[in-house]
Length: 440
Image (tube, rainbow, N blue to C red; front, side, top):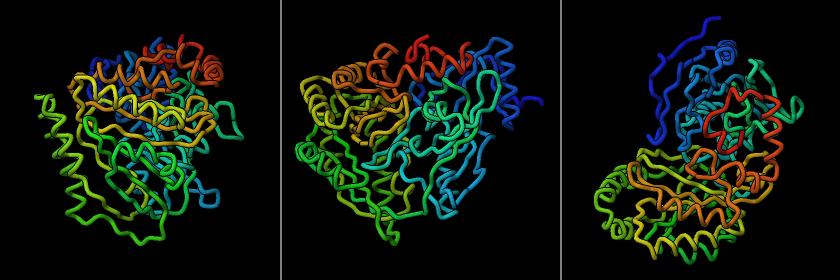
């Protein structure tokens, strides 16, 4: 079967944030799983490495390659809904936004999700994308089965019953084990969430963090650097009915403050860093409390049009407040100027080898900088704190860790490496990023 080619060799691929680029030898957009298998076999024969790329929302070079770049966007859509089992099977190139909307029309929903839904399902799960949850974990933790094309072009079906050792690891595989072609997720009948957003002081949020975590199904908060101000968000199930924010309120909060004004503020901050603390104090006080109710994806997710780079670390949950206080102290006594809020979320322990929540109850701290702003000094200071607390970096976000460090914070690291050696001994799916984080 002929392979559909989506781009000539030598064309440059860039990620969403613009901080990673690659020039693959060829770009392939397979129209079927068979064409994907053929593309992998041909690449191996030609001595070229293979990477699949979604929408480029990772800030690391996880998808970068000088070999064959696979674009799975044609492999999209829901393949099967099994209401009795409570599962949905979707093709790997499906965009989360499309999946969420299609499920809602079927009266179904994922239990938990991240706050951005522009990614492909395979890209999101492969890097460990997550939201916040007391009892419900990352998107990958909701997987009940998957299919992937291995280095020899075979199609492997994986679940707890079929190839269980591959299933155990490949749910978060960073593209190292093969190209995922479909994913089966646990879903449940569509439900309502009531969101309560409320400004709160830094000292109060950090003092009450465990209480907020215990009392809410989904708790998160944002701290505005250079201030003692935070915004909290609590999402809990409710009987409904839907009561979304009014059109004006939604526009002010989600478009004007979160995107339009935020874009302007960041542009000013990039040009005049000294203005940032003053702007931050005004902006963090402009937020007001609001409560609204809607179906899950309309509560969990929000548009992100302001481009940024991000670092996020997963810490043992009991360490997160101490680490955040250290970060605030560093920012307060430095000449750093930070225009983006710092985000704190949680996840329960899961059983996926390279999940950032593998084997431990977890809290996340994410730091961001506006695209085009020098971020190294801030991220280096933050990373030093996070690693002192045994932090695990998000696979798709900026970090400097290597295999030696990661083997020390992931008890099942060796298990993943052994599986990789078995499935891809020639490193057909390797690249520079995987060499750094997984070793050779």
